[in-house]
Amino acid sequence: MKKYLIICGLIAIVSCSKKEVNPNLDSNVMLEEPASATANPAEGKDEGLALIEGGDCLTCHKMDVRVVGPSYQEVADKYTEADIDMLANKIIEGGKGNWGEIPMTPHAGMSQENAKKMVAYILTLKK
Image (tube, rainbow, N blue to C red; front, side, top):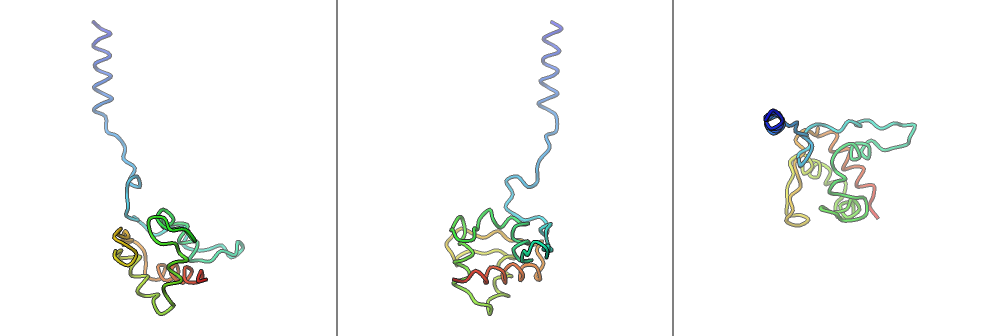
């Protein structure tokens, strides 16, 4: 009988214990600015690329292959430097309709300045 009570007590403790939730799991909203906001000049990495790699961008976009959203080369081929402000706002506010019906997640934690750096880098990929 003691074994039965101990087992029931352990099951109750385990099933009622608070489970830690990873806020990044199953989340499609960037919670904060990417950590690698400044590029290391010694590595020769563009600051916009460092921001892209530090954020959640590569989950839906790749340099030359369409994944969920368009490839960065497709974006570069479609837009010009005159579109930097509009594209930076798209990163921050999100949207849908330009590349299909799957919406782009807003990145409200992204600064306008960093979003422009990312767009400027993407536009360098024009073929």
